[in-house]
Image (cartoon, rainbow over all chains, first blue to last red; front, side):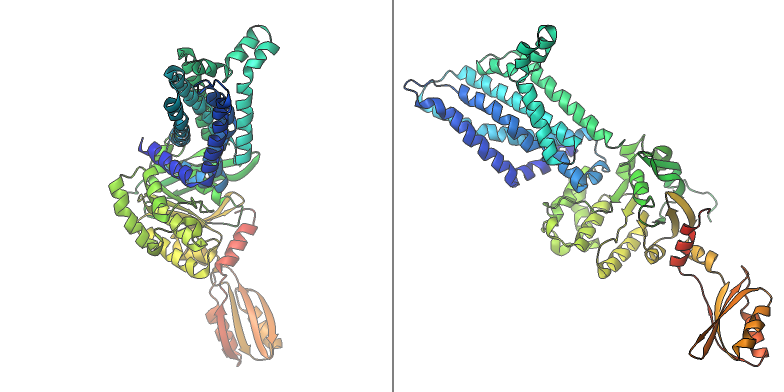
Length: 237
Length: 319
């Protein structure tokens, strides 16, 4: 556990010291700010965070890979992975440590959007239910997106490739529910169920359904498991 | 020398490693005693780095097995990695960390308790003479200082075995000397395995040398024996004052001489004599020269340098 903490702590320091993370943070806040405030100009605006949540899930498709692309790919490129993997550290400790670091930075980003919540509560009386549920959903969604990025970063030493492939996978998962219409029957239904967006919408409506929580946790476990395997496979290639 | 032979620290048996279809090393066998300093000598691409990587558990051997302190590098990888300090050839470091933070991080990864890291940090920084650069970002250090940081991280957890891949490559001559003496110092207490393509370096630091060529070990001995085994007394050069037309046949007639070549260098007549292996002809030659009334102006054993031996060993196919 100490090694997980050491790996995570080192990555967190890099996150909070590197310009990339701040650029990602700035883009996130600027875009979600736009989504949040867009409908506020209406004559009778609704006191809701829904536009923010709907915008954030799209933005994360681009931002999550930008946060994770560095994590392992850079070590492969610089060769520091050789010292990491010849240290008495288990492969899962490396993956979990790095993943936790990206998750913590991500949560810090999400926490910044608390400003919008404060504004809503100061100027209106929004229904708190969908806000709690929405944040839970957003956290799970983001955590899943980061786990996808974690895997692609483990598979290559090229950060750009890692980011682009992760974006591809996330886009495919995001639009999976469209296949529900295109592919009929059971296959279509299965593909639809894999959609990351489908499972988010209930949270946005204020519904906390265990099925969706299990879905996101499964996605995270699946991609992190593959990441550990991919890291392990370096020893055999 | 002692009666009960202790188990070797490292034991490699029939180790072969393939990159795709190409063998990087083939049927490599060697063992390293506890406390020994062993050098791998070979040209670039001979398989030195592959061997180092297998020793440290970074690569598994395709065939064969390696054990370190009794632990198999594949089956008990974690135990092996706990006992090894490793400096890869490229000295990969996190350039955006400071020296102190980096060493602390590596110490933690090696499972050292925080108190011990604090205690060792000062020692390691002293040994590697990094005192003025504790708070410097590694990216801002010169190549030689990075090398020292690399060695510092390899020894911070006091590993039983130190594996150094080309530890003096790419640094300036003064730093090379410093690094060598540092390794010699470390070699007094630890088992050290290092690789190099520089002969004087290996003969200076190592107690035993393995010459590796095209993935196979072609020779193994102490640097002294390697040199003696091949240089011997068989080739010597004499300078004789006398008519070369008579000196040459006289020398050729000495029992044990295989060939004599004559060189006239501005009136100085030198003869290079190749004797039969194991024969010391110095007395016979001097008697022959003096007995004929000529003057013996000089005599020199033409021992081959390690460089020549290395070339000779590695250019012959069946050894």
